[in-house]
Length: 186
Image (cartoon, rainbow, N blue to C red; front, side):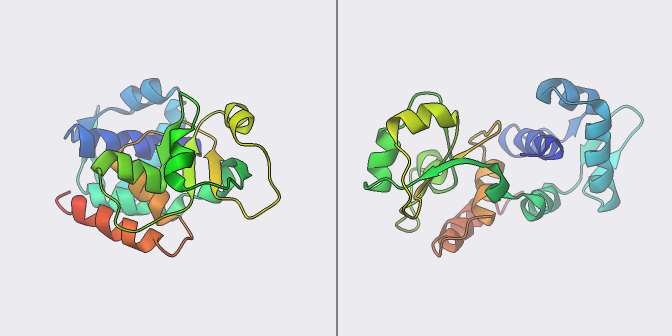
């Protein structure tokens, strides 16, 4: 995940999970351990599209949905794949055997967060240490169904949406539609 995406992740976590609409750039820089100039550049994109209103010492979120769709459009999950392998097991069995400390993404995250599955799925995406996962799930040359993503993933509604937006599998559309229905109020 690019540093600028950490800004969008934080803003949307605050807006969607904690219902906060006002924050400062310094707060984001400190929370995500990134430079103020990176935060400023990210906010500037949002200001230009009227998704935030910049004040003297803070900014307000005007349209969280715009931020969500903008982040989804610039996200590239493929570049974050640190390890991929084929596991001859169901998605549920793969999830059950994950090492501690992984953060589930995409389909698994949706299932865990909302206790629902809009479609059957066979791929498992997680954020975590690829070496720990590799010890449990050995490398395979076959078509992968387990993907370890690098970066600081969180299982927030925004992260789930953005990851699903970028999935290639045919059932991603069903998961995305179900996620959109859950966030229609933002």
